[in-house]
Image 1: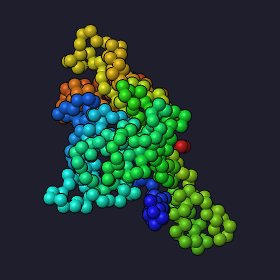
Image 2: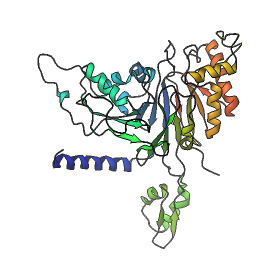
Image 3: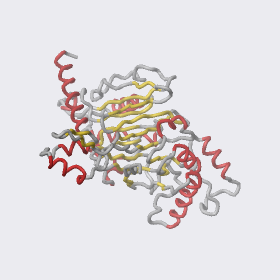
Image 4: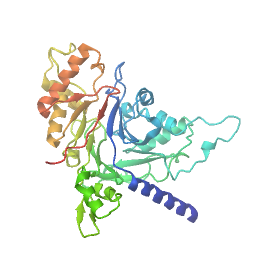
Length: 408
């Protein structure tokens, strides 16, 4: 890279950092479930994907087949997606990634008759979309774009979360970088068994940990920074008026700062309070490694692929028991509702939502009484262990995540 290019890159990064530092706290945080099926989709459940809306920003967690269609059916704006976090490279969690990238990044199959396509030359130093995932994510994207001969009009970057036994450098493929791929993809190494702060800005951070499945899998924890406390203008305005202090000072007080007035009086803004914490797991039969990161999460999203529902699910086999269903589910790398409830209680989660259901459990429980009966029973199994009500996700369901209540 030339000296001018380095200077320009540093300038762009400085401008971006300034923008991030001056952004206000998130007005709202919302989860939208785009797909809630396990291995096989059904007429009522799409493959795995969920969108996290942080104010006007959108992050995606997993991207199963037809996620692009689900986005079009939802209120989530596809063009707002900035980051995509892949939990593992099973097809039901990643097969929708390449079509989605083509949709977001102005993809096409090239130009005919030797005409040069402007997408052949783009600035890869400023990726529009960041992708995070385990080893193989970069190779998958690169290979798919290469052999479909796809051009992208905007750049992307892939960061891989490497396990201790993974190669610690390189791209895990001999293919050269795609012309839209940034060369700045990181290979992120573990620290004390987790990946702390794989992304961080003044408003939010993301950490991750390996969770046990049938293949390497990742769980993510999104933590909002401390937010301003609730301010009572009546406490401050008389003092500002008395000393002819500009009202703009209220902005500093709102942020929790202290302000000294002209007569020496010091006003202290309300103490800042903890932001929201979300734990989003991929497929797992044991997510214990993420416990230190996930403690006291405001929301835990945990898979519950199979359940034992005698007398409720007509497909229940007479020889099945809770124990046999759990053993079979574990052997395939998955969890039951009770396992999800136990883990939610273990980390002290404030809310638990179950996700990733077998195709035998229809996702139309909002309009179908039989489905509602089954999904209510699944939630109740988890609630017995969790200690409070548990929700079951359905496709296109959205949930607002409120700020935790301030301490009394």
